[in-house]
Structure formats: C-alpha cells, structure tokens
Image (cartoon, rainbow, N blue to C red; front, side, top):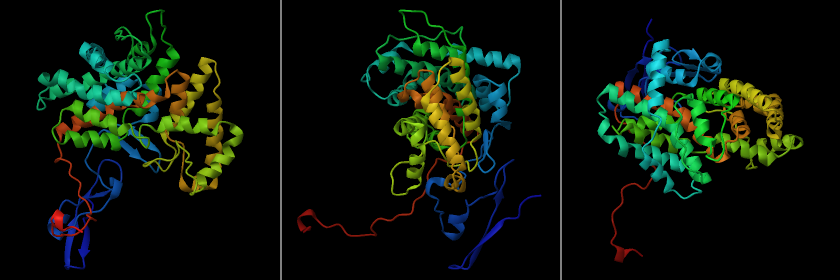
Length: 430
C-alpha cells in the first residue's frame, strides 16, 4: 500500500502542498520536495545535506541505527568472510555476484589493464620527492583523461565499463609508483601472474637488489581491508564523484575529484589521524587522562576513530577489521604497543557513560591504520590505500549515474551578505 502524501501548509499565503512520499526497498521514507519552490516559493535549508537524498541508488544500503551495511543486498559480514575484493568489485559494478565464467573474464579484464603508459611514470617523477602521495594520486588519475580521451564515448555503455575497469586495474599501479617515487626507487611493473593484492604488494616493496616474496598474510589482510572500504553510500567523496559526473565530465576527472575529497582528515585521512592520536597518547596508563580530555569541550584534543556521521551503533566494518588486526599481528609474530593502547581505549570508551550516551563507537578507521602500520605501509600512504579500494565504489556510482542521470548538481544557498547597495567611485570613498 502506497504512503499517503504529506500535506504542508503555509500560513503566510494560506496555500497547501502535497509532498509525495518516496520509498526505496529499505530505509526511511523520504519526502519529494521538487514542487516546493514552484508551488510555495520556498527552498529547504539543510547544511551538509544530512537530511537530503541527492539521488536514488541500488548499490549500497546503510542503516546507521542498526549498524547495517549491505552491498547490493549482501551483508558486509558475509562478503568480508566469504568473498574477495575483485568479486565485490564485480558485484558493485554489475549488480549481482558473478558466475565462475563471468568472474574469470572480469579478472582477466582487470589484469589486462594493470599497466600504465610509461609517460605517466614520467609525469609522476616530475613531482617533488616529498610530495604527499594523495597529491600525486589526484594529479596522476586526472591525467589519465589525457591518455585515453580518444577511446571514451560517454554515450557508449561498453566504453564506460572499460573506463571503470581501467581505473580499478591501474589504481594500485599508480599508488605504488607514487610510493616508489617518494622512496627514490626505480619503477616496478605489475606481475600479472599474481592476484590483485599480491600484485600491489609486489609493486610496492620489491627491489631489483633482492627477491621479494609476497606475504599471504599481508595479501589476505589487504583484500579484507579493500572489501571493507569499497563503498559506503553517498559519502563526501562519492557524492563529489557523482556531482562532477553530473556535469558530463569524463570519469577520470570525476575520480580525481573524489580522491581530493577523500584526502580530508574528516574523511579518508581519519585512519592516519587515529595513528597520530595513539602515538600522542603514548602509553596505556595515560588512556584515562586522554579520555577525560576528550570529554572536555574546552580541550582541543579529540578521540579520532570514534563516532560516525551515519552509524549510531557499532560500525560493522570495525568489528571485521578489529578481528583482522589481531590475526595479522598474531601471524606476523609481533606485538604492537599501539594495538594494546587501542584495545584499552576501546574498552574504556565503550563503558564510559559519556561515550555510550553519545553513541561514540569505534569506526572503520580505528583499526585499519594499525594493520597498515604492521604491514609496513607508511602513514602518508594510508589514505592512498583507502582510495584504491574506494575507486570501485566511485566508478560504480558514476556508471549508475550515467545510466540514470540526474540533473546537474546545483545546491541552493541562504544568502547572508549585504543587500543591494550602490557603487561609489574610488575617488569618493572616504
């Protein structure tokens, strides 16, 4: 049974307007306000778009109150435990899990496109040696449009899918090239006999002077982390990609913009901020002291990795990555004081009345940085790892937008500047 429309009344004009209720297959009912400006002369004011649905999408569903995350209907817990990153990539791109033959073809396509043009390596080498890897990533991915501009018909679904696969394939190659440039190492090329994450690790850490053996533990951990970071509905970077895509810009420009949005410490840079916070705390004995500081509004210290814009319950990805962090450290045979510190911080925060009342639970960033650190990834590369995984979500949303385009994104504003005033000549201004 369809929902009855919601009737709003304007006491100023005496007019009434029926707002249709839009429902998806899951989630809260949503009011369609498209007729509001025309019929009543009003816009809505929603800073940060926290109560606004900018599009309809069949890719990812989140219920923040219940701590639910599903990709195309599949719970993240099942995908993390039973699937692989490339299979999740196929699912996000195409809507269903692949048959064996479809997966084999998809894996071949991704593997085929792992190389980058040699001139792109030259482009990356032009950056200063200590440039931030995210700055290099944004520039390098944006430059892909210059290499493939003649092979992209935006109106051809096959061309669009090819561009999507190309970015999923090349992102690890570009990321590794940025890291090697920073380290002063020679270029490394993808070895297509390896799996997606094995190939990435080989490009990151292999050197000509000695043989490099890819760790199965590391490859498995990266695959899991990439699954957990693959997509997360209409977050800041994904919304950016869809917004840029709404202008008709090419997908490389859209994803480059997404990388820039992800770079922010409130978004993709949060796992780096978590590690910096743990190092600032320094010792388990100091946790209570920093907990108190976090509760003091006049203290600039903030607990990073707690709370989420959407989740008001435990982030399901945090549970998955927490378990993985323990497994990685156990398999590597090492202990990490920061892991012990993180565990103590989590336990105290989960029992503290302040954090419970405000529902500040650990999020996905809380443990991912510890895994990256244990596997030898430098802190400056943490957000790059996020970008590799999130590329799958970005291109999936870009494809969806191309198939069901919305009008060009154009938010309105509440103007608070001066009202109309007359120009005064320069010589007459006192």
